[in-house]
Amino acid sequence: MSAQPENIRRNTVPQIAKRKGGDPIVSLTSYHAHTAAIVDKYADFILVGDSLGMVMHGMDSTVGVPLDLMIMHGKAVVRGTKKALIVVDMPFGSYEESPNMAFRNAAKIMKETGCGAVKLEGGARMAETIKFLVERGIPVMAHIGLTPQSSHVMGGFKTQGRDEDTWAAHIKDAHAVTDAGAFSVVLEGMVEPLASKITKEIAIPTIGIGASADCDGQILVLEDMLGMNPWTPKFVKVYGQLGPMIEDSVKRYAAEVKDRSFPSEDEVYR
Ligand code: KIV
Image (cartoon, rainbow, N blue to C red; front, top):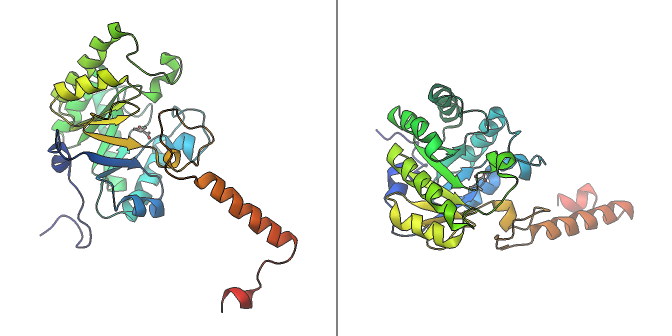
């Protein structure tokens, strides 16, 4: 008997972990069933990132994102997809206090969304929690370098590792999450040679975002690469300009309503 419904064949955590040093891992964020269905055709895993607080809900950081919102968007993305491994972010305040608290909330996310793994921010300081979760059946993707949930401590969204004296701490974080059992680690906003060095040193796949082309895979926030956000980080390559397309469509619709050229029922439903 298969653990998955017949039409659903998702990538598994061990399959992603085995891609270390191999075929590059493709991933994007998604928060919405129908866009996730498109992404699912090309992505090895999809992250329901807590960036949704900023991208979907207009928050100025990810700090205010509640657990229930992650679960709601996680369910939508699981419903919309069949192939990609779905990873859901643990939001700020849902895991840092203790391994027990992290387990309770990670289990809630996995049970209620049907996702295959969770992601949490932090390196050496979260190693004990990562080990605790993995030993109890919860696959964990770690996230080091620029960790947006700590932006208040870091003084904003700043590229990490510009000063070579700080590299040792990031390298220590990468080894700590690997030794704790994380199956993969996101390297965000990290100078290229440091991300490249970490990728060569550790045994689990690194997923870069504003890091290095040498990483074992890459991730981008979907709306950033589609040109839909008013503010897009400098490192993002924009592959489509959906923001201006949406505006143009809304403008044409508004003009048709105003000048009464908007089609009547018999023209639309022929
Ligand atoms: O929340 C998110 O979208 C993320 C990615 C930027 C990796 O954590």
